[in-house]
Length: 103
Image (cartoon, rainbow, N blue to C red; front, side):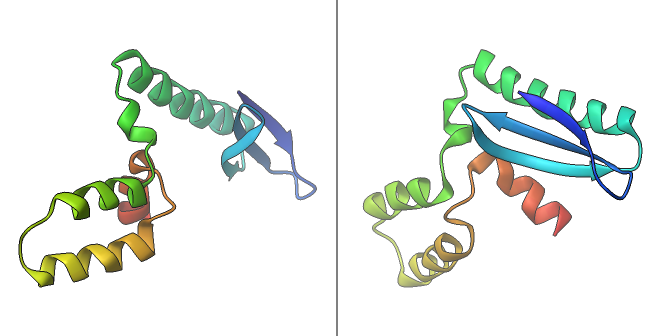
């Protein structure tokens, strides 16, 4: 569920929570922008759930561990996988695209 709060600086912060857990926040200068962003994020998550794409909420570390258990190839790929697991392991798959594109 999203909520919009006005910050002391006069900006508007969109806060998205699920089951009481903070998922995302973003600050905007206009309240309408904050509402639109929150609606888009919540809509994306609902669409994934409707299509049954539960894996999108899987942490990267879990996917990397599954891949590693099945990998029988070279060590270079395995070392790159370990590197990525350390950098992205705590992020959910759905959020990695945003991290790569907007970082």
